[in-house]
Picture (cartoon, rainbow, N blue to C red):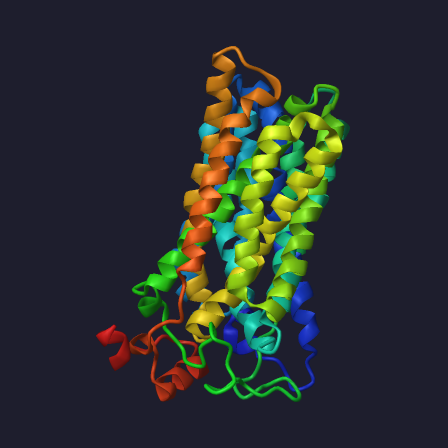
Length: 461
């Protein structure tokens, strides 16, 4: 069977195509891969099944996030070249295969197969699926990039809102003991996500070369905002700028702080409040997913009005204050705990949804997808740092005889310091120097062909 219908050339939209069909197509992919945020539902059953530690099972999640960042960085240019449809379909195959291989690992008692499946192969699907719609959405919505990327990327944050209760229901329905239901639950999710993501892939389109929204006028040097560029920077040039690495640090700090809570959310609330049972904890994971999803849309849309740099000052500065409250007074009541963690996670999600527009402001839209992919190596690093800090501190505190909320207090204070570092890095970001800009004629030719051009300005950078 020919797969030529996946080629970029076969996905160019007709003149009457409705651009508002693109966000739902992207949303179908992001809702599916957002299941990774519900992985904590499977943690305790997997610990029981393999008779191992939380740290060993938490490594599955960390591997998947590391592979997300690495695959996005390595394959970002490929995604730009082949277009969103082929990239989304590839992501669907990898993500679904991860569940199938993971199920085989559980069935045979081989934990390394779960690492390989859900972690390694599934993580590749996460990376490709996450970045595949970004540059397409920005091309369709040059007038509202924060809104557009927020609409799609909120699905990644909201995936657990569906996956958490669904996974809990599957574990309850397939067997009396949750650990005995992991295999059929993984198989069910793998098939379901393959179908959903494929529907998104077959719907997405790219705009024609000369397409612009009705009434849209591109910003000029005279009316561009101070942090916005009217020029373009290639991915290879972008990583040579201090702005890229400062923004990398900002994202790393924001993600490290948020992912520590998300990855440990289900057992954490049970340790803070002993009367919370497993189903109520799964509901808490769902609430955090809702906050994650809402933050991706609300805060990224707000950034279109107030700017990217100010919104990140809020994410990191207010986030640090909330972490301090959580560490010092988190056991005062469930309401305080839920509200505080919910706002923190909304900032975490908002940071993800805002960063593509921040990249467009700094580097232009020419290779924003590829630059975004390389920036997500910060997510890969944070995928190790966040869970490692929380899990290792909890394990060491438990070994010292502590229990309940005391397992997490130290790690929460560490996160306050992490966010302060990110806040300072964001303050240092300035517009990109002109020597990194591409010549306009070369940029136009590259955007038309979808292939990177080696330009004189890129060589000089």
